[in-house]
Structures are given as C-alpha cells and as structure tokens.
Image (cartoon, rainbow, N blue to C red):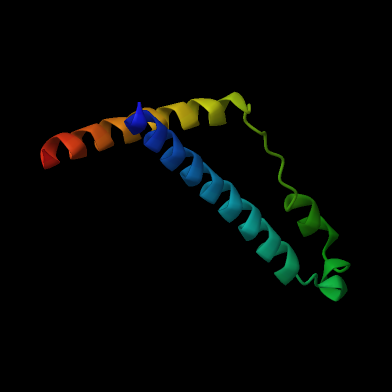
Length: 85
C-alpha cells in the first residue's frame, strides 16, 4: 500500500508541475505581449487570418492521466524495490 501511496504522490506532483508550467507559460506570454497598434490598423485582412479557434478536452482526461501515471509509477517503484532486495 505504501508503494501505491508513493506512486500517487509522484503522479500528483507531476500533474501539479504540468499545470503550474502551463499557467506560468501563459502568464509569461501575456506579460511579454506588446501589441503593434500602428501596423495593426494598416493590415485588416491579415488580422482576420490570425484568429485561432480550438477546442478544450474533457476534464476526465486528467483523471485518467492521473490514474495512468500512478499505475506506471507503481510498477516502476515495485520493480525498483524488487531489484534492491
């Protein structure tokens, strides 16, 4: 049971690092953005081509990812502990 707890904690920390990096990258890009207002009004046609529409995934994907990384981490930890004995 201790191995599963360690694997879950590793998975949770890995996911928190992923979310923190994603949020940090978005924050950095937002703070560093400097609009070019003068040239933006000159080329209206190009501005319309720069709009990006995307879709978001379901939050259940992150739950399955957490479970999957936990299982993989548990297998690796079990193999590591078995090799040390």
